[in-house]
View 1 (cartoon, helix red, strand yellow):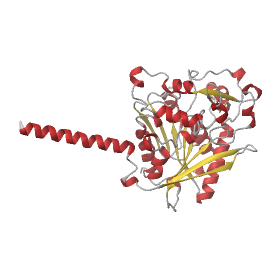
View 2: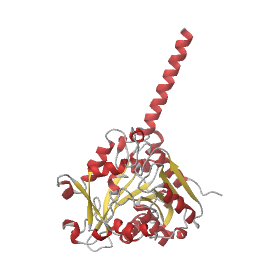
View 3: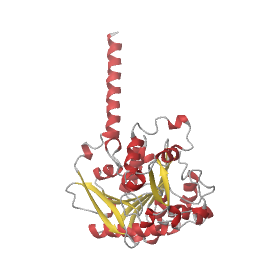
View 4: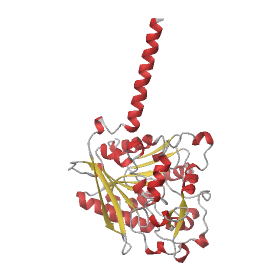
Length: 358
């Protein structure tokens, strides 16, 4: 009996250690080899559109003075939500930007014009129907180019790593295809590609597209969980995380937040491009022009940019020196803010850090 109780106590102690290790992995990875204070700065970069400014945020370890293309990354957001509340939201105590900064990266994000903390075009103060769609993919690529050139000039670099999410993959890849010498490595998270059937989450009416669209918190939550069974939804988003994200995101649009119910206004240029390009089988960029290492990664329950898009796109990347495609289990289009987000973080960092295969 005493021996059995001792063994049981040992098992309980081991389980406790494993549990503490798991918690440390989620929220405590900011210690040990990831110790150190993070330095954050913000600035604006002139946008290609006259009178508009692009918000840029930078994070790296305090005191960092040596910079190189292999440790410098620029994040690009998707069609509806800004980068500043996606890539730098301290869920569980730290954001994706924090995670990379703690691993020695000089990491940047930008909010495209009309999004987040960047300048909103004056057309967004008028009724949406009064003006044509704002911020098309071509304009977004030009905005990314302005930010990448700003980063390169600040750090004295020839190239940087670039990562896009959702529509941001078309922006990042479009920039990389046109400027291969400026992109060290490219990450496409939840890639957008040719659409076989119209997305159920987008109500597209090409004859009535205005300058911008309005999204409520209920719309955002419904889209996030669209297509999931109750069992899949259970525990997917840790308690409080959706509210934390929604509070931060909707606060970036004070005029929208003042409405009843509160809304987030998002430029409609991406929807215009979905109608005239992606839905018609005419992508905005050529995969064969990517000549840098490429990682494509997405989650298995992604219903916004379903896996068939990646399966179609991956074989078309024919001139990358090497490429990878990774599918992550139990996650959606927004896995970076879900229970399995560390899988995404590690896959991306492993790709960025690894030596080129021989």
